[in-house]
Image (cartoon, rainbow over all chains, first blue to last red; front, side, top):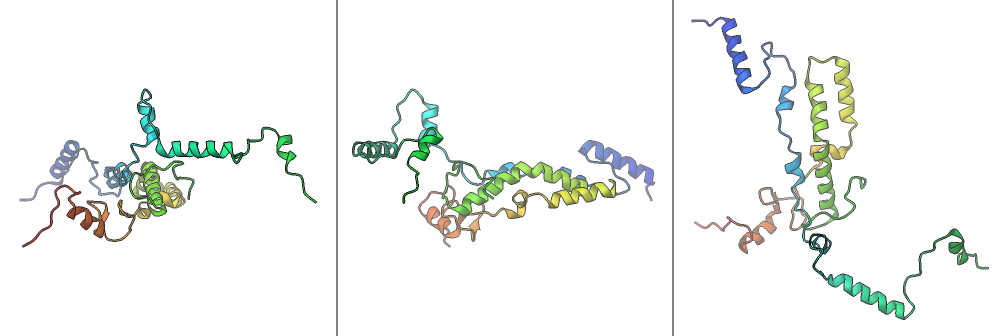
Length: 107
Length: 113
C-alpha cells in the first residue's frame, strides 16, 4: 500500500514544526547543519584553571584587612637599604633638558 | 602572535610558553567562533548566490590562524606536556598516575584483578 507523496510531505512539515527544524522537501543543501551545532568556545576556553587567590585580588576583595605580601616587603626593605647606601635607581627625568644633562658625548 | 596574549598572567596551572600560547589560542577561538560559524553557514548554503559564497570563503580563509580550532591542543595542566594527555583529567599519563596514586583525583583508584 503506497502512501501518497502529499501525505508524506504533510508528515514532514509537522515533524519540522514540532522539532523546530527547517522544512526542506527538495533536500537542498542549506547549511542548517552548521546553525544547529552548539558553540563550544566557552568550554574550550575554560580548559586551563584561572589564576585565583593572588594577593592583589585578596586586597581588592578585602580592603579593610591589611594583607602582607612577603615578596613585596622583602623588595621594599632591599630598596631602603640600597637608598641608604646611595645605590637606589635614579629619579625619572621629567623634561628633555634634564635627560640631556648627563648624556653628553665624552671625548 | 603576542597581540592576543593577556597582558597579565591569567593561568593558575603549570606555566610555560606553550601552555600560555595554547590558552591564548583557546580564548581567541572562543571569541571568533560565532563569526566563523556564520561564514561557514554562508559557504555551505547552496541557495545563496555564488559570489556571496566565494566572498565568504575568502573571508574565512583570511581569518587569523589563532581563530582556528585545529590550532588548539590539549596540554597537561600539571607539567605542560603535549603528548599522552588524558583529556578527562587534563593531565599527561605520568602526572595522572602520580596524582591518582596519591589520591588527588576523586573517583580514581588503582585496579587489580
